[in-house]
View (spheres, rainbow, N blue to C red):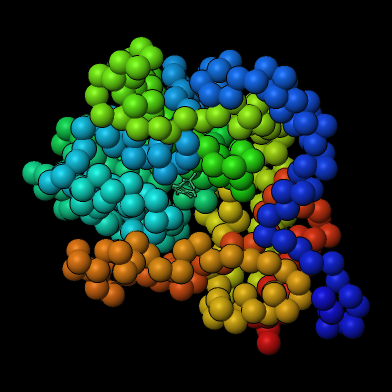
Length: 377
Ligand SMILES: Cc1ncc(COP(=O)(O)O)c(C=O)c1O
């Protein structure tokens, strides 16, 4: 790529898993080799160990490994008995899986607008959306920043609703001294490859303190079988396999260091971008720890800025260009543009900049300079 100076610049990807693999490749290959030698691929010792380790990282008693973050959400909702005729409160600004898990079960996602500074569910708007059919609230800790649980949990408690955290993007984050995933009844994690803790394929987990729910979820992920070939209820196949578990256990050893690196990069971005007129850097409310799964700014003329970055070899991403209530999938629910203005405004302004532990200071400086140049143009 050619800089305005005429110099050829190295592309900067949004996320660079190859840079990570260059550091941990030997550890990963050894761990996979062990699984291959054992020839035990499903529901074996690697998964059992990973479930304990992830539960511990989240400050929970139990972890139940499943096939993906989406499955974690679906199974958590199922375990709460949610299905046809029920309503679940979700933020209007998230990945489709947050709402898709609800509608897959025949329940209705009820979209609530976001708080513009944090991009998370606006707790002040929840209560007016609760009806006699509401069964649960599903806050999302978007981009790695905890939702405002101090307000959400009392509302849920008063109204007898379950709280299922969509913690797909925020493993390791904390809120007022407690880990995300340990704040509601059930916490759902995604180990999609580009997540802060990513597998080499699809994987997910549910964490909980409830022995009963843990046992139920173990049944649901494995055809309802309490014993081999004896099914007690309708379940299906959603298991986290031994190779993925072995990969995740290696990566888990690095998670704290990677988190610290991401937080350092965010501080550097904040310093450089905070001085640029028009750029809004991520807010971190008092008592919240952000783990920067994404480093997401707001900018005017977002699409033009994104194109200008691309022209200089800098990848950036829009998470998410269409809010959930305006997804074609949910046209029949009757929402229209203007109903949830903050989610709609965010979808037109957000831009996630390159963020991964191995990012170098000179790359951050280049990204910031390119954003400044685009806004000056
Ligand atoms: C907020 C959110 N919820 C749910 C999911 C679904 O996770 P998965 O892709 O592992 O199914 C993701 C990730 O993709 C996500 O970002």
